[in-house]
Image (cartoon, rainbow, N blue to C red; front, side, top):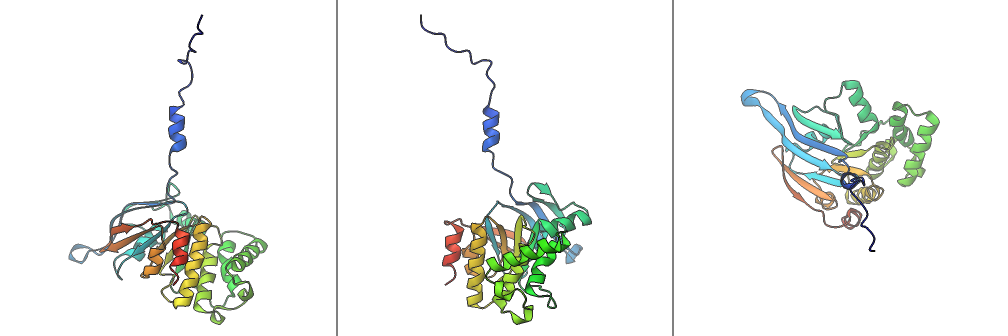
Length: 264
């Protein structure tokens, strides 16, 4: 007698589990309907006007555009340096634009880091002291903060400059110190505002190599830039006009290869 077909009616339905397991993780950074307005009436200026943007884990995103188009303002909104007039910003799935000042300060101190065009190093502190400062402010012990700072400077090729003041460093070296400082607290995302704007071609190539290494290590980067070499190296590049993201290019292959190839 042929065997009976097994009764599967009582077996658990795992289709929903499969759907959940295949769901994409939330973006590291997400903006919806971002607006930043200044003034009122006829003097109203919309620096950022209804921007939506998602940045995935380990992704490098560049934002380009002319001066005054709103790209630096958008970067400040993404990182909690400024509050939007409307819309939401989420970091790793958690809304941050409506946090209180203390909670938002903690986010800026430990979860998001910044690299600026003018470095913003403290001139009276050595390179290692600049790098360890965010970790100390976040509550790390002096020994742990110093160990982390020295390790970062070594990884960025600055072990021999750790105890130099910024005034004794080249532009490219100062920007690498600034990047090391940004990485001090192992942030979810690094936001860079014109990081090559004050650098010559050789120093720019150094920073491009550094960004390639960071991307290869899985670091999420958002870079505002005028430099087409930096934009060409990103996974995705957006152009911004009059407060709006007007266009997108990429991806075009592994970011690391493009970063390395953009140096020349």
